[in-house]
Amino acid sequence: MKVLVVGGGGREHAICWKLAQSPRVTELFCAPGNAGIAQVATCVPIKATAVDEMVQWAKDNAMDFVMVAPDDPLALGMVDAMEAAGIPAFGPRANAAIIEASKAFSKELMKKYNIPTAKYETFTDLDAALSYIREQGAPIVVKADGLALGKGVVVAATVAEAETAVREMMQDKKFGASGSTVVIEECMVGPEVTVLAFCDGEHLVPMLSSQDHKRAYDGNKGPNTGGMGAFCPSPNYTAEVAEFCQKNIFLPTVNALKAEGRPFKGVIYFGLMLTKDGPRVVEYNARFGDPETQPILSMLDSDLLDIFEACVNGTLDKVDIRWKDGAACCIVLASGGYPVSYESGYPISGLEEAAKLATVFHAGTKVNDKGEIVNAGGRVLGVTATGSSLPEAIEKAYAGCKPISWTDMHFRTDIGKV
Ligand code: AMP
Ligand code: GLY
Image (tube, rainbow, N blue to C red; front, side):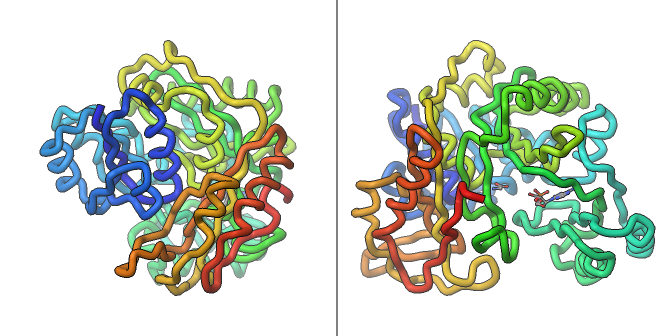
């Protein structure tokens, strides 16, 4: 089969790497891809958000199957558009991708269907938002309604901090239209766990649990990022927690979306907090997480194309999904200054040596005109290893980072340890 993956980050490299192992995939394409993805797929220079162009290319080149990985093309309806062109596509339609694209929508859905989450109110009026914050007191959490590259959330320790956040979103339009509606919610406390689950509109199969590290620096300090590393499974996610989540969060979410006429096919990302009162939803995403996907797919023992097709065809209950024993860990190597500002174009050395020790997924890389692989984004590489235990996986992943360097490269040294 001829398969196209849409996207070009570390997550998409892991998806392409896994799909390339399927005997059923005869030709693999990725748009736009990156320098690492080019080692396993043919890269197509089309932006992930260019819906019409992508559909036209998929038609012209007779794709048999398309996998849409990032949030924005999903929210823009790329899966709907592929379907309309008669091309089977993995991922939620726009009306289901809204669980990520609008926090106000997802909070309302959880309230309506009694799915445990933080108490909240939604505001479109600045003064009303400010007086709610003063009334509730701190700590309190302020979220821009729409997509904001994972940066539209402020966990405010003081009322003043929360007021500033609301003003920046609603008045100064820091996140553009994404912040004209804000959600203000109760601050929850507890370990965070991510569970990604395959869905076919009706059935849901959770993958291994995982944890990511959102802060830029060691000790969970510094600004929030897209994720500086991840590991799986999470030791906090016990069989008892898993049973509670399946019954009270996962299945009710799939059923709620179906009942609302928005059947979800694709991957639901459940961001969970294990509070003293039980697991609660922090957020939903409508896609694989990045970098959680890199360790998770490293642990998958089944054919990923079979699973994707089962999600599209509504036959997820019939497909065999097996995981390796042990654990996996991914360390993100980032450009110096990420997530604020950084320089690109520095040649990266040590990639061949690293590849003998771990799997090096590329996130933001490209080949320059001298043929060198250079950094071309904030998160640059995701060095990933599996092991018989989590400590072993962590050690192997860090060993794989050792040979790699470029000017100002930055990474956390405590992934999986805090
Ligand atoms: P989100 O983009 O919704 O995942 O939020 C980013 C991060 O903010 C989460 O991973 C949590 O660490 C934190 N966060 C979000 N909502 C809450 C909440 N209600 N209480 C405490 N922390 C939160
Ligand atoms: N790692 C967080 C996310 O993908 O949203």
